[in-house]
Image 1 (cartoon, helix red, strand yellow):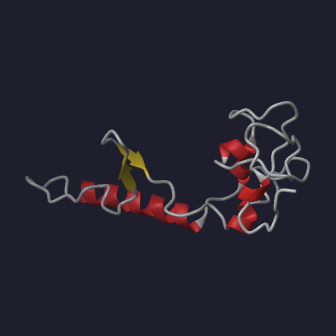
Image 2 (cartoon, helix red, strand yellow; image 1 turned 120 degrees about the vertical axis):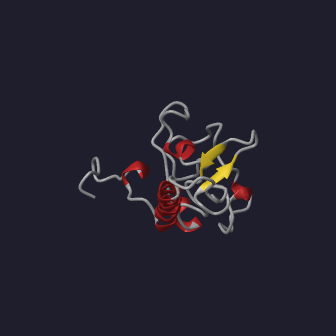
Image 3 (cartoon, helix red, strand yellow; image 1 turned 90 degrees about the horizontal axis):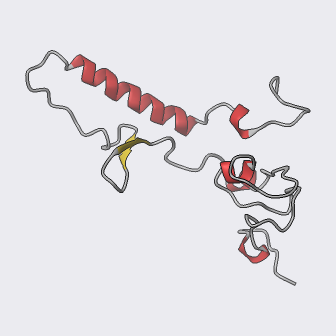
Length: 128
């Protein structure tokens, strides 16, 4: 709340969730295990993608597994809104940056990232 601009909090200002902390802890523990075995001739090292905070992408390269679940409950995610004025761009739109569709609470209505009324889960809204 201390870093909030005009009383509004950006998603980047929130502390990491428990799941994100757990994934970071798994990666740090894996790295410590590698260092602990560093003086062994043939260390028995498990694969980093075997539950150690890493995963393989489609090309077979390792990438960080930031989270195993959702960043927040669906109810909270539906409250995220952007303040785009003319168009929603990936560099500026908080909805796009969080991997979400724009909703009716966003300032700009009718953008290309807008969710359809009948696609909002649990909203009970039907197209009129």
